Image 1 (cartoon, rainbow, N blue to C red):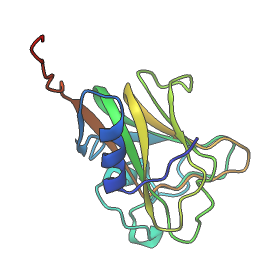
Image 2: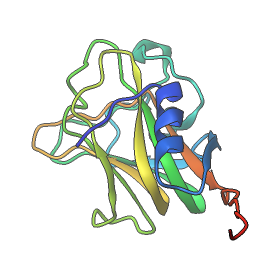
Image 3: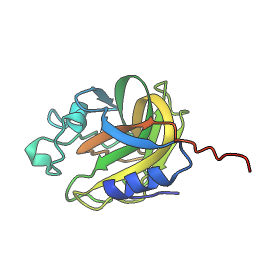
Length: 175
């Protein structure tokens, strides 16, 4: 099941979950080490998706690009394990269907058996969508596009962790 949410709706959803209380904090992926399955050219390198620039115009050098291939992927190493609350992805302008069917994986290894956060059904051209991840723990976040003859473009990938706090409990005196 896929949920496409803006940030305010995502916060509302996370607060409504049966969690002790949570807050989305800063983007963990910003300026972290990223790799991808191939480089389509010398402009669309993996680090462009974690440079903090959501510009959806590839010509402004802010998006990744793989070669046309089977099962292209992109991955960021967060440096340590975090509890991930959401992943935000900005789609490239002009190729809005390229991310259809892409999978977001979060885990502690670089293989594709890690827990899946979401499957992207569609992100409109140039838009950013947030995908809640039900507090999955992991160090690596991977975007995997299954199929043959695929090209993976990402203009920004943001990873947000969740800070869990204990709820205050109220005790009532016995009658």
